[in-house]
Image (cartoon, rainbow, N blue to C red):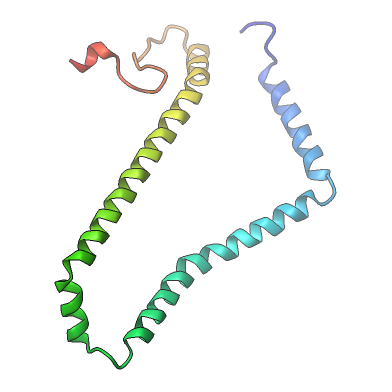
Length: 143
């Protein structure tokens, strides 16, 4: 290893010291605990509350005006509603897949240099897999 790089144990010691200093700041821990509690309370409220509220509103709107058979026939017969739902779902799924791909490429790219250093430090005679910095195969391998 080059001499100008700090050693692993030195970095770990500095990291521990910085974390200790950060934890000792007044109000820091309390603030973190408050936000953690708020996040934990909001998750089930959103996951359960919104669908339950929507179901109650739907049933209140339909109360006394429609039977189960009428509701099923209207929903199945309404192709405009089901087409809109399918189209909306496909757009959201495509957007989500695109965002996940970008995230994966960014993470792989950011970890590439560090992993190469670790691999060569562990086994200098190790050969490369031939993947580029984003984890993609070489252009010659595609054909």
